[in-house]
Length: 307
Length: 307
Image (cartoon, rainbow over all chains, first blue to last red):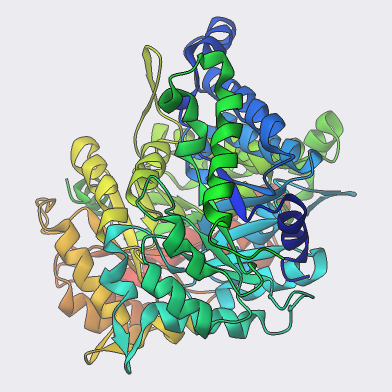
């Protein structure tokens, strides 16, 4: 309950970070793509198979040092239903290797439709006599613009299946303030959304004090990170924007509590494309990903007192 | 440009409505499911194939009288990647039959990731020497909580490929007011989001005066529909919540301009499940869908002066 499973993996690896697997085909080394293009032509299927091979190799290299992956749904949808097959396989493989999986889908809809998203990404679906798991992640990012009845079906699954959600609160992009920073009776919209996270999560609090309703808060806004950490004591943070988007480890430290818990920091491209930056042999892309993941862990934890 | 293609189909059919294809397996008649369960077992594949057969039969029956369909992504994701294959096939089939397709995905993310969603649902993706179309809808619903840089990649595709988007402004669900009705300097958040739609669409206005950036405004809030129709003269409306959610045709009339244009009204379950309500032979489910679609057309247009 309440992200306890994620927190235990963070404690075991002493690493409060998550690797974003957002693999555009451009990121995949040439040698890995070639065979698939030969077998399946220049198709979405070939691209999706190459991406799974890429993901699998990275998961193999990082699963003992990183607690979680965060596949971004957009980069799988981009390759059509073959891409969605790769999403499913990636999730299953990472969980098999003991990792916690956060599907970054930012899903949102009215209540009845949210039930379908909840079943798709976190739950099960009945087909005649079988109960089947479509994607089977541990957590899903969601957008709360529709209010409580779009969130409730997710809470039911969080409780029944020990899953979690992360609600967009203050996003990492440059224009996030256009709406999120606007004040309602003196309180910014992002803080209102944060307050709703505390409400929604109130009866799902786990043994480390955090609920199953987390918040997405960007590393690019360290002042808001600090403000929200104080305002939302039971809300676990997923922090994107470290590294390539400009968020630094010192600012990110504000996302954590005094025990060094309360957040996971995401890095995607810097890890997937570490082999390009290193300039190493592209066959060693997964090794380069591991080296970058270790560097990131050390960078972030140098500012924390991890219990 | 600017929903001209949709508007021309509305004028040709004299029908400003859209059929939501949100097909849970429960909606599909028994006789249609049976063969697929026998061939593929009680699997997500069998469910997805049955759903495509259901969709195809409905599209065949309504394509001459209804201008557009709106598949809801959640109900396809619910059946895993097989479901996403059915989504793709449904979109292709409806377009082949001359219908305009709005994928209801409510997607949202930061700019670079939104490029991936835009390519997935409205654009193309390059794999080596081929330029491929993953889902290929005409329009996509999106959530604007992240502000302008999450919308910009979609505008590029709207212009280059004559596509459209519908931004969530005032949603049809009971709790939509929790955040959307909150006032910022005296203006409700939904109206702010509406104003952004006018800005985002400003240089995509087509010959009927509407831009490629539409808005989702629920039939369940007729006062806001009227207010927003006046406030947003270049914004085409997608109106959910008619019928099963309680929105009536008289209230919905406020979504339209003096020429009877400016909006499409959605109905999903009432049409897909018309055969259950009628109590007709389930083999006639598509015929019942057609009869309900005609009834809905007549109900809505009785309040309009369609040019």
